[in-house]
Length: 132
Image (tube, rainbow, N blue to C red; front, side, top):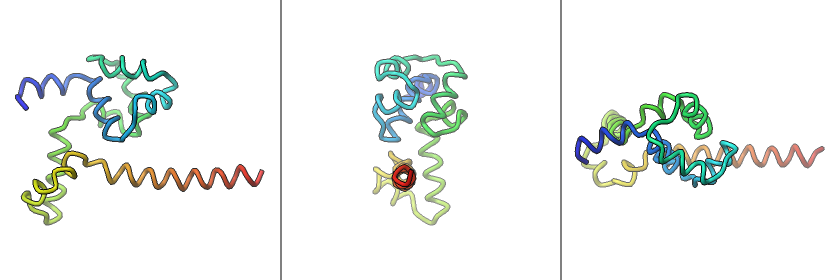
């Protein structure tokens, strides 16, 4: 990716929201539900280059990430952190290149873990509601 494109993307807050939402495996409707708004409003938000800090904090909370993580999100940082994690774990860069899906979707395992936890909480909630 050319440097000018990278710089533009790193400044475009709406695209950051979109990328993190997609990494979570969520639709615009899913995020809209968490924000108490519509799919169309999320689409408009993702097209916005400038989003206020207050709104970005609200979106970060809905996405389950920190404000700083969303504000400073970049593909390069994700790849850098993933690469360092694997290098410090004794996995070579060759292995990372061979498993490009893992590099391009570093949140996959985290999302799966949260989904498992959510299912446990859902079952507990159902049990509580049945006992009332």
